[in-house]
Amino acid sequence: MIIETLSVFPQMFGHADSAVSASILGRAQANGVFTLVNHDLRNWARDRHRSTDDEPFGGGPGLLMKVEPVFRALDELLAEPAEPAEVVFFAPFGQRYDQGLARELSGLPRLLLVCGRYEGLDERVYTRASRVVSLGDFVLTGGELAAMCVIDSVVRLLPGALGDQCSALEESFTDGLLEYPQYTRPAEFAGMAVPEVLLNGNHALIGRWRREQSIIRTARWRPDLLAQAELTDDERALAEQFLAQPGAPAKALGEVNVSERDQLI
Image (cartoon, rainbow, N blue to C red):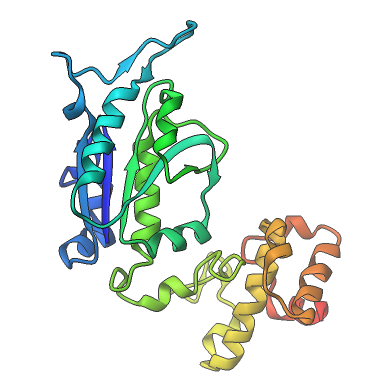
């Protein structure tokens, strides 16, 4: 897979200490799982100051990214004899980014992520977008951080990116639910014990417990996800019974233990 960025701060992606050069992403690049190419938008500016922004028509605070450099850059980059590119812009009005969209993008051969800055982009640039994406209802100083989030979430879904490929199959949102709670050593800390079911080696019982905890955690923290989750009638009843309990939203982060779960069924 080829991932490209178009930004006035390409060093945010290309520096040796950048987020996309470290850990899993760094290893994935080194192993050829994906190729990252970073383009400096200023290379397509035509004035001696390499300007990519200007004052907005009609007045107002701040500066807007100019339309001409973006068009010139896309004309050149998309004309290259390479894989067809999905051109992604970032804006508050865009499609809400989620795991489903990350999975969709991970199946494409080439992504070109266009990063705006300042007060945003000249509206005409969006005519060149394959899609416009929003990470949520908040404002960033530029699209670079949003692009990094997309790169991270997409690359980890590519074959060979994770040491254990099953890790990507048992995460939050994979099946419409939040991931079950997990624990590691020590088995007891500050009076808090790891659930006994995880210590007995019975993988069938552990699998059942994890599925139930995933449903309960989703009901506790993100009940809005339940409507679209693939649940059996018994599983949906478990979620509804949990939500019907007095004080259910105040459950501890450790979720519901086995004895409490037995009282729900």
